[in-house]
Length: 119
Image (tube, rainbow, N blue to C red; front, side, top):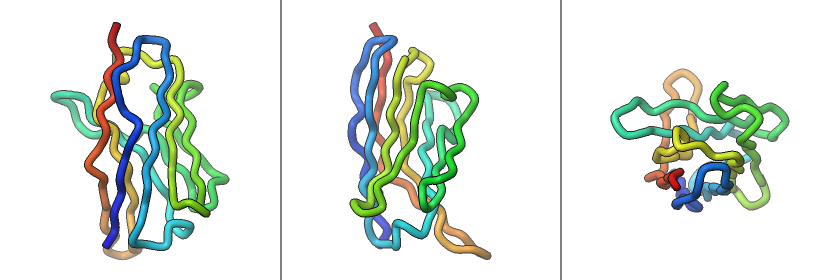
């Protein structure tokens, strides 16, 4: 079965950095785009970044452009999110996501990892 396990969250001061990782299993990882979403308290879950199956195309939310970098290692079935210049408004639970299928795609989620940006 599809499994996505996030790690790397924690408490960081404003201006600091964190690197999140997602270990994927149960599907052909190299065949699918991967995404990171985040959900702040009381808010909807929003897309942060997406990377194509081969890693050549990336997209970012405007709020994180220039600060976050998504990458993947298809040999290790992992996708990462390097977060620099963190701001208090980046505080959220970060989720790894994959959509599998075409006509009736199914969205799979990890359990999330909490990132808290605070002094």
